[in-house]
Amino acid sequence: MSTVNKSIMAYFTTSVGKKQIMALTGLALSGFLLTHLLGNFLILVGADAFNMYAHTLTSNKLIYVAEAGLALIFLTHLGLAFNLTVENKKARPQSYYTKVRTGRGATLASVSMIYTGLVILGFLVSHLMHFKFGPVYYVEMNGTQVRDIYRVVIDYFADPLQAGWYVLAMITMAFHLGHGFQSTFQSFGFNHNKYSPLIKKLGITYAILVSAGFAGLSVWGYLQSSN
Amino acid sequence: MNDKLMTLNLKIWRQKSAKHKGRMQDYKLSGVSPDMSFLEMVDLLNEQLVRQGDDPVAFDHDCREGICGMCSMMINGEAHGPSALTTTCQLHMRHFHDGDSIVIEPFRAKAFPVIKDLMVDRSAFDKVIQAGGFVSVNTGNPQDANNIPISKENADLAMDAAACIGCGACVASCPNASAMLFVSAKISQLALLPQGQVEAKARAESMVQKMDEVGFGNCSNHAECEASCPKGIDLSNIARMNREYFKAKFS
Image (tube, rainbow over the protein chains, first blue to last red):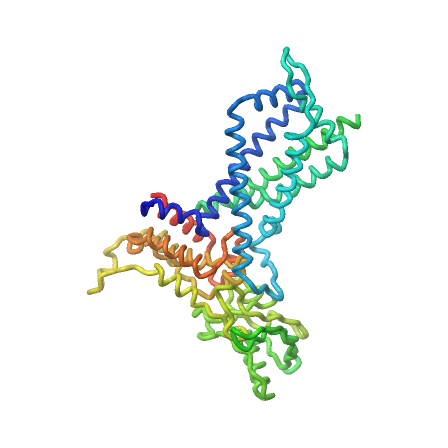
């Protein structure tokens, strides 16, 4: 291996390199969330629009490439999170008898990233099980058989417990995004007296809007069935 | 006068040596004047312990003027105690009240092993400095003072970064025991000046590598370091280090 390659490989194992990969994968996942949410809003237009959207998306061969890429990004983010947590634990083998947060630095969101992350992981598994790999019904549209994913969604959220779990998971995600989004900029070296506070606000707004969007759709789904 | 003196309930970490297991021990200390510094309060306790024939509490201290970086201590769960921008030696007992309980512990990190009681070995910082916290120059007659033009802005930023006294409060307060505020200040004070830019890439790489090697944790942008720093080292230094490191690797 050439020296240059070795030096670049070393990037992936240092603390600064790892935090930047964490940031990059996190930002990519945040971007995915936004597109996912915007697509989901089609459910408000109606069953046909939503089913057609889902059909168009999943019948494109490129979807496999996109899914593999997304899985790789997610697993990298996840793997690094565990690796960093273990390393950080090892960096302080003896914990403090008393330790308080100064109130000027760490936040509930920042200290709970691994826990909120674990909730998101659990959520993702249940989400994929119930929707992507969930029940398959067909409906005919313009002479072709397409999956009636609309029905799967409405059926699922008819259960208030399941709708409630989604709302809780989204609140948890808001905390995760709230620290993650702004953190990305710091990790890549963007820190500015004037713009950093704005980025912080933008990140929190983004976290609340995206999470509220998904949670709102879950509540909407529940209301559809109770009507 | 005497009615102003305080009695405190202290809970202090006692540990005979690096090899011994330590534990928290309770002490009752009376006659504490609000005008004493925190270290003078511990001195008072030690005088009492010596009179009783007990082993005094070992702690680091040197200038007692807030500039040497020797004093440490986690006081009630905060590095250098509850006052912002204050070293332990500059913290005064008037910030406490009669009857208060005060928990005193050493800075804790794998890279800062306890030597005895409240003293920790912070030579891991020296190792990071040795890895690249310097500039290589040919010695000789000093140059004319204004030979190398430096913008006021960069001169100020470099000076701000150079205010770091290397006390280790950033490591102690970081939930991950990361040393990035210290290392980034040392990288910044040189990277901002023309004299330091020559070796900027190699410096960023080797100091980051050494920082990881000696066992500090990873930064996850909590900013507890900045909040606990007695010298007000800014978080933007860590951002600069992240940039410098990225540049070193990919340009």
